[in-house]
Length: 193
Image: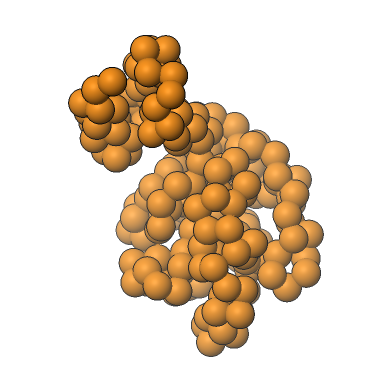
């Protein structure tokens, strides 16, 4: 069993985050897995590709029902009829901390037209709570202490930190992996309508 095909698939399809080729990547991965059914790395790649396809622009957000760290129940139904920004962050990741703090101002500027949900990938709810209190985060934050294996992150196809999706009022994903400038620009144009 060669690991070359697995390596190339991972490097050029999965790690590159090129969502336009995920269908082909999944087909290739399935073929490799048929030839190497004992290869656990290929099985994990298939799982990651399927998760990534869930967050591709143009797909509908999956259903979810979770309890936020403050005890609030949060579901995809809460996002109905408004734009939603869902993102991952961790106390140990500087870029996600910066995005989170900048989103606080974006949320203030957008008011009730924008729902925000944070998914914390720390292994400790205590550390997550420390950051929430320090930064006075106004949105629900999910922290199930499962990091990248969380059903929420896997179900939404958010596999890195930081990572994010922007969802339309009808539940379609209209942005994925956006920078803060792209988020601001996109929201500026859609919220004025």
